[in-house]
Structure formats: structure tokens, C-alpha cells
Image (cartoon, rainbow, N blue to C red; front, side, top):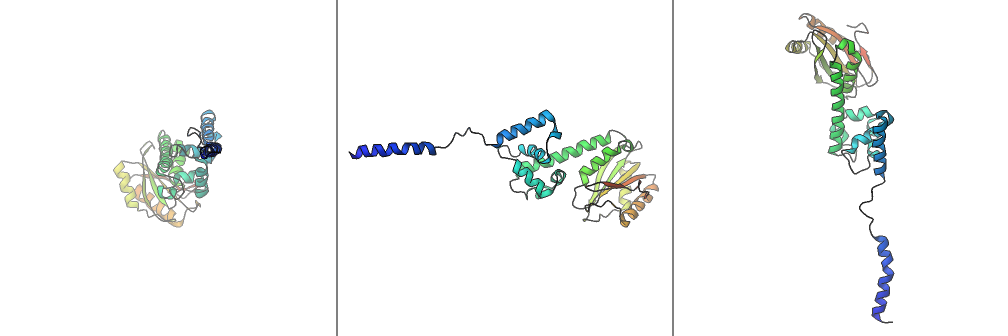
Length: 251
């Protein structure tokens, strides 16, 4: 056999191996694409109630991760933060501690929380606060329940008890926020408010008012009363519930 013939046989014997090793078409979709499409369709057909918490996160992560599998990332977020509400309340630095979460996904989660807060605020402003108390509580829970440190907020009301402003007065430590009655009343006068609702959170999860909470509330109420401004209530918010000073007879 000639050398030329031998080379032809060798070439022919390698051809099947080369064909097997050839890369697959780039048009082939990853396995999770079908899952993503089914999840999206289930949301459209049956509404958000049909989705588990991790599936809600999956959908929210689609925009920030258009090509990747978002299920492992959604489950990692829930494991890291403990709940869907805690994920949405987390700050950008905290979110970025989860491997695989980029700026696009972080921005999407932050925008979702902001949208929820604004919607709840608009609903709370539709009617006098006293007649839409549940909506007001829903709003302040979104804003404060998952905070890691204490935050003190003031809800300013007009003569018809409608919400005209909501302002965070400051943040403190895990168990204390400094509040100055004079500054509270001054701000109410600047806004032309006729009444106030004080709100702060307890990161510990215990909504029981402390002695300092009770004294501060009385000091604010007394300072406000001198200028014809009412303090309707002081509400302590936690992850699991709330305490109303008015209901407890503390105001």
C-alpha cells in the first residue's frame, strides 16, 4: 500500500470523531428557558398568588439576568435574608453579598420595593387616615418593618386628617433613636399640619414600648398641644406586628 493510500485511510478514520466533537448549534436554548417561559405564563394566567416567594423573586430577577437561570439566585437570596420582604428591604451593599447578583438585578429589587411603598402611600392618602388605618399600617410596615436600626418617622395630617407629608426624622441604633420635641413641633408648623402620628420601629421584633418611648411621646404631645397640634397616636412597628399607644391607653 502506498503512503498516499495510508494517509487517506487515517483521514477517513478520524472523520467520525471530528463530527462527534463538533459544537452544537448556538441556537439551542438552555434547559431553564422553558421553565422561565412557563413561570411567566403561570403568572399571567393565574396571578401572583400562584407563585411561591422564590418564584416571585425569579420573575423580578429576569430583567437583570436575561440569559441566566434565576432560580438558584432567588433561593440564595431567601436563604441569606430569610423572607421575601427582607430581600426587598435590603440595601444594595447587602444584596451584593449574594454571589451572582449584579447591579441590574439589585436596581430591579430596589425599584420594586420603592414601587410598593409609593403605591401603599397613595392608597393611605386617598381618605382620612382614621378611616383608612389598615392602609396606613401597610404603608409604614413596608417602609420600616425590616429596618436593621431604629427609625423615627412623622406623619403630618391636615385638618381633615389627610396625610400631607411623611418624613423620616432620623436613624439611631438597634434600640434607640434620639427625638427632639421642639424639632418635631417646628416641622409641623412649617408644613401647616394640624395633627401628627409618630411611628418608629423595633428591630428586636418586640413591639412593647420602653419607658423612654413613653416619656418621649408625652413630651412631644405636650409640646404640640401648646401650639394647637394634636398627636393622634404613636405606633411601634415590628416584622410581626405593631403596638398603638392610643389603644394601650398610653396617649
